[in-house]
Image (spheres, rainbow, N blue to C red):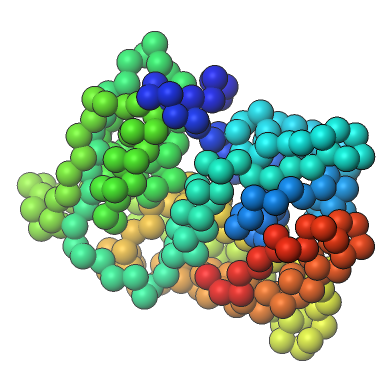
Length: 301
């Protein structure tokens, strides 16, 4: 998707890369930088980014290409050139990352109560503004909405404030958002998840993490490996909300595999926090000591 970086209201639009099968350099780089650099407006030298990205398997050429494309998307801004080049998240991207981190952290959390209300959104964006329409749909999807009938989308969570903000940001005026009590439907409730066939990806995710968890419990994982593990696991976890609106567990079968996947994710996320902190500070201390003040590594979701 390509557009001029602004919605119809003239507000700057950040076009974050979406997850794709097999992963992408841009998505992985946003995960990496967002994990320790989203809370600062300091610049991070490209040489430091290249070193850290190399620890998760990205080549120098892949990193420099991804950085350039993320800047074109409004996710990053750059300063300088050559060996002096440096990057940071744009103000709009930082704001989105804070919201996104909270949403990713809450995804699949059984401790979040359901108020037994749905949020519904109906909207119309003309064909002549297809790119705005697709961007608006993508944001709704990320917020946990799924289409039920054409342009009528539902989420099982209270998303009224977020819908208002997104609509204003994209200049979408022809829309209606409202909340509906779960027992207030005539006919069936919104079918936004196929509960008859649980997604295999959650069981596969948990299974794939078992060996790493065992090694971590045995103290056999060092800072560099812990950094790689956390970034790779987080990058995969970040993709799940794009395809899953986050149904309350009350509406899901008892054996729904998301809970086990979340337990696996939380265990790795929290256990790797000190390893990530140590590795990032070591790398920056060697390659860009002036950037150490901007490092913030979340220890818990």
